[in-house]
Length: 133
Image (cartoon, rainbow, N blue to C red):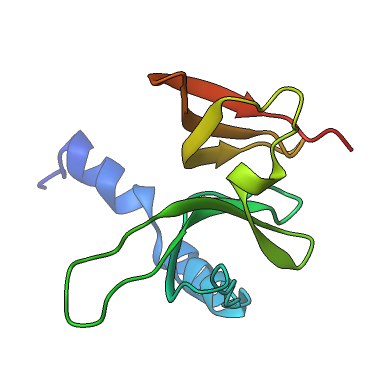
């Protein structure tokens, strides 16, 4: 009598048919993701979201793309929070944000801190924006 190899026995037992049926049933029972249009910064017509935290805060970029061209400037780093879209440059603290020019938003943590690429006195820097309130 032919014995299946240990490999074929392992593969046969790895995913029994009942388990596949259970997985398919569970997948069908999962709710679908909802799509939320975050909008764009006033005057822009396109945007890109880069991350999201558990508070629903989303850093990204908003810009105006000239129809029929690849021209998409100027791009501005933004954050969607509190029901609106805010240019990151405009929400910098006047005391600590002087001289900084935010180039792009990269990530956000669950404390609302946003990692950015920025310029300070003409030098590229990585920076962390921390909410004051």
